[in-house]
Amino acid sequence: MTEPEPAPPEPARAPEPRRGPQQRKQVLLRLDPQVYEALARWAGEELRSANAQIEFLLRRALSEAGRLPGTTAPIPRRGRPPGRRGPQPGPGD
Image 1 (cartoon, one colour):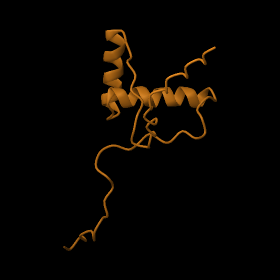
Image 2 (cartoon, helix red, strand yellow):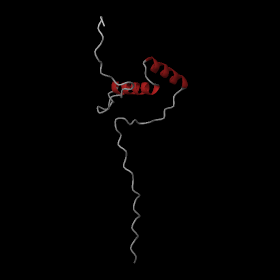
Image 3 (cartoon, one colour):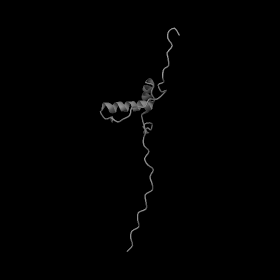
Image 4 (cartoon, one colour):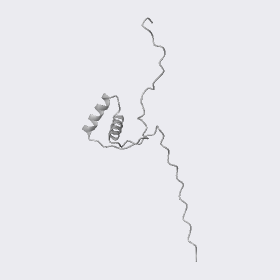
């Protein structure tokens, strides 16, 4: 009687990359063109990208429904980082 052959070893898996604060989940979203145009106009009025506007609205809806996880990080601020303000010139300068 022969012994069964051992199963071949499973290939080594790369560890799952940890999602840091800068990594964002990418999703494909299909929208009606008129819905997108309205969203893009609204985003432009609030100085946001369409993507940032979608995230803003989704977070607000989740929060209002009581479904936004408490561990959710705030939306990252974009644009120029706040700088230190030096001495401001006075009226006589």
